[in-house]
Length: 116
Image 1 (cartoon, rainbow, N blue to C red):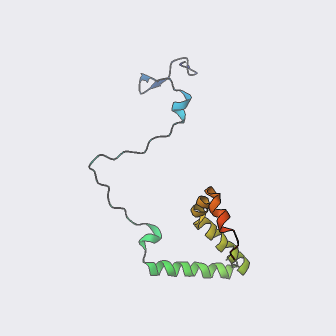
Image 2 (cartoon, rainbow, N blue to C red):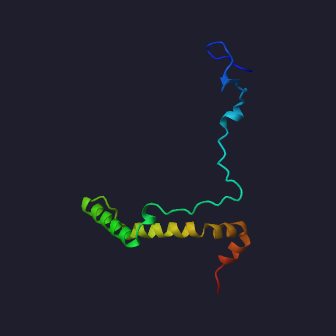
Image 3 (spheres, rainbow, N blue to C red):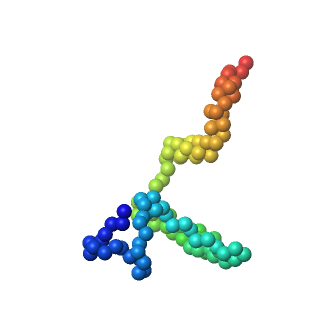
């Protein structure tokens, strides 16, 4: 199954004949590097806005908001848009809880009965 390159000689890697590759071998991604056992990772350093003073970040954000409003590119929510966004947030937050209720229809049926 060794294919010959255009020069007619078998392919070589670092002076040794190249091993035939199956399609599965060609498509597998590299594994992430493994740390040596017992080696501690250096403490992570904060970068970007996380490394800045919170007051400075707030000032930068405020300036950006003012610039967007003066340029006319800022979005202002109407009360209907805000209501819709709030409903979506509630659905996303409680999605797991709804999944449990849907899995047990007897609970849903008992919750929907009108009380007298």
